[in-house]
Image: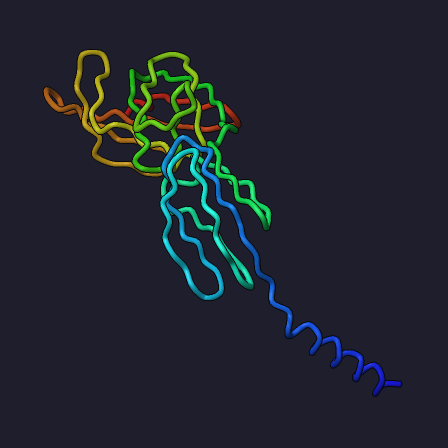
Length: 199
């Protein structure tokens, strides 16, 4: 009985060895951005650039991978089957309410591809006015993603950022008494709270 089971297992193993999967996959760019991606299959790969609303058919054998290199996958989403890969704009943005108790601040993206304009397109920076405002991001934010401009104005005084420690931003007054302002950022759910700690 054991020999029969062993022979059956060996027969199944050999029957599966000769079968190679292969096919054609259509990659279609329905996003607003030119896409640069690597198409890898059967131990080979090639770089392809696909303009918006263009598509390309790629032959594959054994396996394939479509790896987006540019732009950031934060601003894109991909729907994939064995026959078709559809690249679209990321339309599932995160919304945050910002309570800024310090001064008008500029939040920088710094090539993270996180910050979005109200039109859902990426931006290099967002102005956070003093008081309450709303912002959108392509991914969930953590305090580590928050980057402020180095120069700020509190009242009539100019300050320059000289240090960051976690969620604390240290600014030194650029003239006069050279006092220090410490700004703290807290993120809780969909709320961003920015306030000054008196030093």
